[in-house]
Image (cartoon, rainbow, N blue to C red):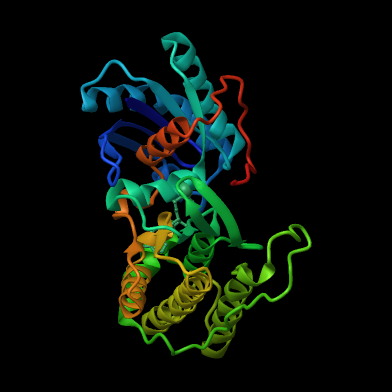
Length: 355
Ligand code: KG4
Ligand code: ZN
């Protein structure tokens, strides 16, 4: 079977064609994957503007889907997989409405997909099926969530951020250092030249349950807003000490040291939680997906820790780590083959939970 995937949950309009291979270990193959990024539009505003995002999806969706089908050289497909949530509701609605109309016109099933199930599937698309049980961290601009996978397609939430996502923390810290948007790649580029212990920013440890989700044990949750505030306080204090006015940048060496110090805390926090959970649950593999998995220190440190413990580490290539529709098509295929209900009346859900 061939599946058309469509993803419009945030600032990327994406469509892809994914085919089943019939192989148990590598069940899918990407035939095409097209991503129209809106980064240039949102950069001017220092972050994603929901209304602009939805409007741009409307402009791009037809062309992106046509392109994905043409690149794959297919005109027929057996199902359409589309992101139902979570995400910006106006943006989700564009992809979902388009997919519903197309599924109806073509008479093919519509498979709604959770965006994070898509990110997790990006690991399988490239690395093949993960040895289970596995623990996977999805870490992006909108999410920092830790999942346990006991059986294919069955996800249990172990912890997530109570406030900022890790990528959001990167973006906010980069903004206050004057490094532009998106901040993750900018900090990643500068950090290796800095001293990662020049500034000892605190690590936040949560030990109590979340009042809003008492069923999730709180000690695997994350919090990054305190770290961001510590960076802000440090920058404000250094500015005052150096007698800088608002528009003056900090000296370059200090900026580079702050990037390195901030990045060390983020990466250690993420990996401590991931590998603790892996040990606790006796995982046979771990994975990191989402935009922040493109981070070079996170990738290198994760591989090193995995090697030291004899645990296979799954991380997607940068092209599959950020939002794309190949991962949505693959997750849709898994749901469809798993007998998930197919419903053309589904609605977009900004806060959709997984599972
Ligand atoms: O998955 P993604 O494309 O979109 C969301 O679903 O959010 O992730 C985007 C996020 C942004 O916050 C961006 O700053 C971050 O991923 N990011 C990085 C790197 N590349 C992208 N963060 C750290 N290091 C990177 N190399
Ligand atoms: Zn994403």
